[in-house]
Image 1 (cartoon, rainbow, N blue to C red):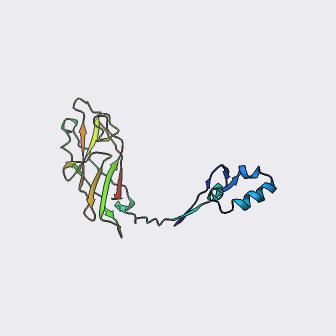
Image 2 (image 1 turned 120 degrees about the vertical axis):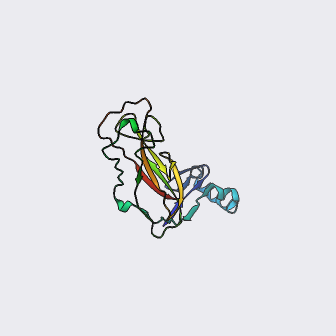
Image 3 (image 1 turned 60 degrees about the vertical axis):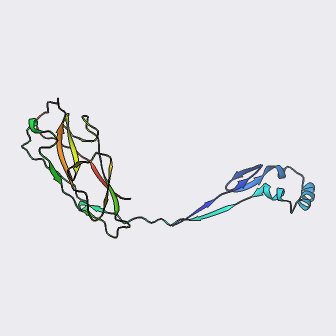
Length: 189
């Protein structure tokens, strides 16, 4: 892709449409103009009054080949129907986050991943759920992976993610279904 920038340099002039119009010289009668023009034709100060500079910049933009996450399908983590509110502690009910990552013709194997979403009231590093007082703690190979932060990795080895429900210590969780949503972002470093 070629991008052309045009620029004008004007001194004591009115500029529009990238053309300089010198207002001071237009006020001088034509007779005086011929005399001034002959005497100052090679003067550097006269040349400085009405200069236009064109600047051409060539830019090559290389778009990295896109990665396809989970074959462009939703990543679903199902915690099941048997969660007891008394056992939700950020350890019990941990589930793997199963996904695939396909980066064909990767420009670089150095990549970073982030999980973007709304933070829970109990801790902004946990994913907010539809049940007040309940969040989803994300893990990478058993270590905390805070929401809205990035994790560096080398493709084709991908992060091993887990999700685990966690509640506020004093929260009396409502029974029933809960949902949470986030966006996985993978970028080249």
